[in-house]
Length: 364
Image 1 (cartoon, rainbow, N blue to C red):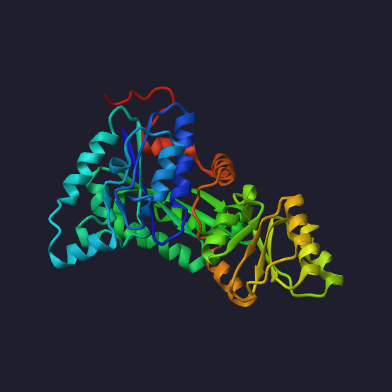
Image 2 (image 1 turned 45 degrees about the vertical axis):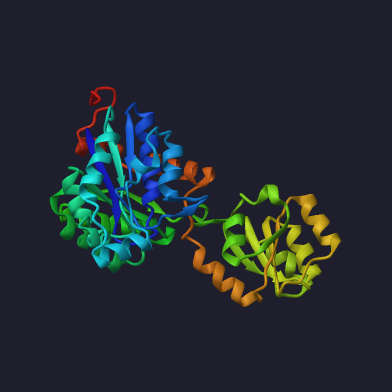
């Protein structure tokens, strides 16, 4: 059995996406797959249950039978952290993790473990990434999100210094298209000369950074006025409608799959946006649109979100969320799968893990 710990040096690097993509590829190649999130610090209460939404999404996507209590056995809520700090929490978290792991491994060829927000997490309960990997005999695959040339190299070398020889390699993620030649031809060879395998360099994709209409409404605490059946649509661009109506159509046609933010008192701009590739209209200032605008939005299937904020504030809030949303949409999953098929060196990865397609005997 092979155990892969997908971890990263920072938040929102693409760990969940990589777990989904690898898991689905393993299944296509004939392996039986298990999944766990050993330590979760991002769980929240949903319908009376405390769950990790990423772990639950992966459980559903990979069709895993284990209960969430096994898939995410150690959940650090604020209450748990406070109890640990006060010395009131007596749980043996390592033993709890090992029991769950023994359940997940039954009959599996490959186990995917998803790390926390960064390599710093877990120390408070003596379950940091290096120790978890050692405890569960896992090899770490590190996802590093591109920020700049110096940072990406430093992040990779930091991960190697902390994890040591058990680090099987890295994936360089969200590389801007204009930086891809330099990353492929300079940074990747330089890392490999230091003994670090780069299994993939993945380009930045607008679709993977996108945010759903539902998420937009939630982050703005807005009211969806119409088009409720389209709130799962993904928004890739954000445009502000503050120009004259004469130039609005030309401006809005520059970006597809966009959200347009404009004042609720600008019906001319709202109509212009509805004539282009718009996924939703965000009306600021708590000013409701006219029935004519609402009717047109319903007709073309564009949700309208009414918010209390002014336009500038709404834009600032939304920009904080782009690239930091959950990987829970089928469009994102399919696109990421294609990217891995095109750019991930599965032959080298399987060789490192000692996996052979069609020849691996499952553990009993």
